Image (cartoon, rainbow, N blue to C red):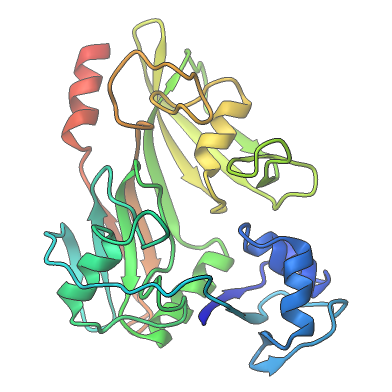
Length: 303
């Protein structure tokens, strides 16, 4: 059984339980969410909910028990990690390009979770289930940069609350197609694409998503170096938002051009700044990670 927990954010408050679950967990359809609820597999604030029409409130803690389609055995692996900070509650890791965050069909080894299990000796939070121990938030396989990982459920819940309240600082460096002339904000709801269920898109009934972008510098006449700050954290948010304003990320063959002029091995996107309130000390902490070498080399080439 794969157990996942999330907090109801303000944009999903006062909505039916089946709608909330389907919106908060993009891999689940609304009909499947209804089956989970009526089957007793959903808890709200530790109380089982069996009516799909139950209205949820902002701040409610929803726990969903998902049946595993097939057993997933995760083996600890001695994979080097770039750890920027670590204490008894959490660690901040700088993920390299090409590393999947957690195991899934087709990616059962070589993931960040495999490495974390080895490094932490299995001491990771269990809120997000056996396949995602310690994982509070994710970044794509080809996105580099900072992630916070929790070693216990108390720290995990505290960080999840900050994510739900949009109080975690997350700034990304990226290179996009075209010349962006001024700073701006994209405020457009994101949900599963109706045309391609493997992709996300701007959809009317999606979850509110806000990305603020800042122009660092133009790169020649074809590209722009940007820094994007996330107000919300939806799947593929920066990639979808920048594509929606006709400035897809360089290297992004999913939301941009099929053929890319440079061998970037995926989108040029780096989670360079991460800040949050420590769950034990109450102190605001901020971490940064330098641009990966391929990104720096590309900047020099495009100038």
